[in-house]
Amino acid sequence: MTRKEQKEERRKKILMTALTLFVEQGYYDTKITDIAAAVPMSTGLMFHYFASKEELLLELVKMGVEGTRVVEGHADVPPEIYFTGFLNQLFSYAKQQPWVFNMFVLMGQVRRVGMPEDARKLALSVDAIDTTAEMIKKGQKSGVFRKGDAKLMSRCFWASVQGIMEEMAMDKDMKVPDPEWIVAMLKAE
Image (cartoon, rainbow, N blue to C red; front, side):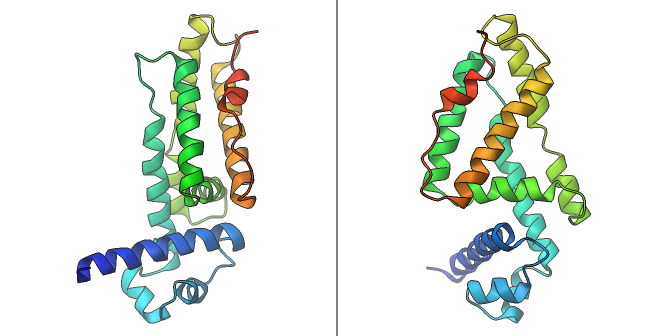
């Protein structure tokens, strides 16, 4: 492994360790020394990778924002099929890569008032609600989804996904729910 690869590997280890600690202990209760000890590395060396805890948080939020780009639907796929497939992929991937559960938890936490403002603004820039609402409207037009406020339905859809991801972050043995259960909330009776 080259020096550059070693450095990148260590950087990833710092990020994943910080993500876990921020979720388990909270951002403000996690100290840089806690992260360095868990990696393990000296605190001084860690500052060569990230100048501050806030910079570390911001980098994690950037990763979370990038991960949400997947939500943008495909015009040629019926919405109910898209949502079911998306949830299948999300839950399967998260089971293989448990840090994804933690990322959902962290992104939910960072959106709250009181978190570092740069990270909060970035987290709030993610707009899966409106994109999903447009797909729900498409499903409503075709008669597959129930009538109602598409934006509210989108919020409920994402609130259930967020809740599931949080539960699975806390209980590593929890089975993945059937995506059809979640999509059924949207379907016409």
